[in-house]
Length: 372
Ligand SMILES: Cc1cc2nc3c(=O)[nH]c(=O)nc-3n(C[C@H](O)[C@H](O)[C@H](O)COP(=O)(O)O)c2cc1C
Image (cartoon, rainbow, N blue to C red; front, side, top):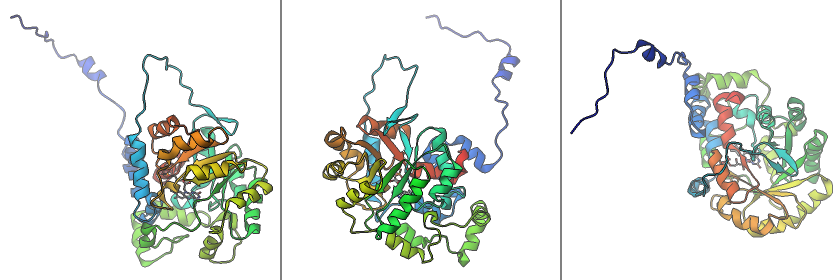
C-alpha cells in the first residue's frame, strides 16, 4: 500500500519569525493575573489576595451555614438552555427596557452597603460603570457616599435608591428626601431584613465599620499595604446618608431594620413617593401577588445573596411560577449568584426581565477598581 508522506523542506525562517508573539509579558504580579483572568471567579481570587480577609469574607460570605447561597449557585448551573441553530445571529441586540426606559444590557447593579470598604472610590466607581454600560445602579441606604454625592459624581447615571422602612418614619422620610432631591428615579424597598443577617464569618473576623485598628492590624497592613493606604488617605468611612448621626453604629443598625414592617407600610410608602417602587427580597408566589396588588412597579426575587435567611427557596427555582402569577402586572427581576452571562441568560430565559449582580462587581472593584 502506498503511504502518503509530507515533503520536507529547508526550515523557513520568515515563517518561524511570523509565529513569534513579540508582545512583552506583563511583569506586575497583579496585572499579569488580571490579564489572564477568564471569569468572575478568577477575579475573585485576585480580590482575595488584594483585600484584608475581614473585607473579602464580608463580601463572599453568607448567613449561617451558607447553604442558601450554595443552592442558588447550583440551581443556576443546572439550567439547560435550548439553543436553536441556523438562525441569523450576526447582529445581537442585548438591550431591553426597564420600567419603560432602554438599557443596553439586562444586567443591573444591586445595592451593596459599605462599598468604600472594598474599594476606596466606592459607589461612584460602580455607578460610573453602570452609566457607561447604560444600565441601572441601585445605591444602598448603607452606602458610603450620600445620594447627593453619587449624583454629583456620576450625573448621567440611571440611579435607583435602596430603602429600608426604618423604626421611625421621620428617619425614612429624611432618607427618601435625599434620594428625591438628588434625582433618584426609583425606590427599591428591601423587605428581607427584619433583623440583620447572622453571618458567622463576620462574627469570627470581628467585622466592624470602620475597621478597628488592633495589634493584628499591623500585620494585616504589611500584607495588604495598598488597601490600607487607600483607607488612610481617603475620606472617613461612614454611612453617608446618616452623616451627623451622633450615636454608635450599632444603634443605627437597630433603627434601620424594623421587624414590625408590614404590607401596609408599602401603602404608606406609595403615599409619600410618587415615582416607581420596586420590592426587593420577595421569596414566594403569595408575597409576589400581595405586593403586586399594592401598586408597585417591580419586584426583585432575591434571597439577598444568601446573606439573610439560610433556608429559603432558591429564587431561580420559583421564578417561572412568580412570572406566571404577576408578570403581567409588575416587572420581575432576580438576583443571587449571577456570576456570568450564562447565569444571566438562564434567568432571563426563565422569565426574568433583568438580573441584578452584587458580589460579581464587588470582586472586580476589590481586584482592580473600576478599571477591571
Ligand atoms: C457586601 C454586600 C452588601 C450588601 N448590602 C446590601 C444592602 O445594603 N441592601 C440590600 O438591599 N442588599 C444588599 N446586599 C444584597 C445585594 O443587593 C444582592 O441581593 C445580592 O448581592 C445578590 O447576590 P450576589 O451577590 O450573589 O449577586 C448586599 C450584598 C453584598 C454582597
